Length: 192
Image (cartoon, rainbow, N blue to C red; front, side, top):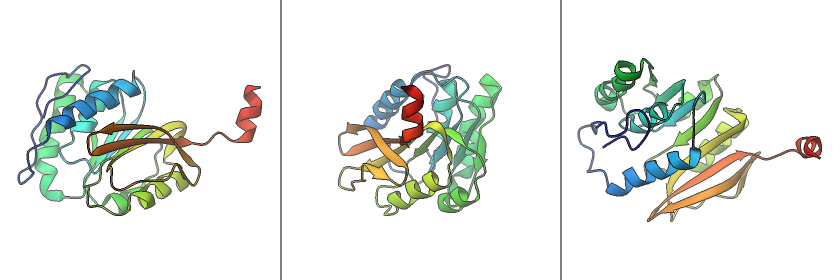
């Protein structure tokens, strides 16, 4: 897979052994998502169900820092660590890596992030619960966003607790939903 933009544009990352070939749409999807997010300088980023670590690397390449990732499959650790070493070697920015179940990581996490990207396997059935946990635990900043990649046949609601969907992008069978905290009436009154 290749990094699609930013400082590390064009660099190649490895896919862990046993993974199927990555579809070309994945590069286009990542490029589109990071174009939507825009300048990420000074923004924190969390990549969950990280796989190869490429999304986390892409975030650093686009200016995000600090960046963390979580991947539950420890057999991918060697490939992930090799891939993310690219940001430290070329940019002096280390990605914080966790190898554990994402559900456990969310329960233990004490940090807030400007962006959280969820990319669970398509057969995964607990996307709604992941979003509920992240929202209840206040894992994104008040102006932060949660992005979740899912198959089109597995819909999510527009509102989940205090979170609301504010954007959605379709990439063939793949959909990326964008959620943020709903504005409270107090915040709306401050603007008036």
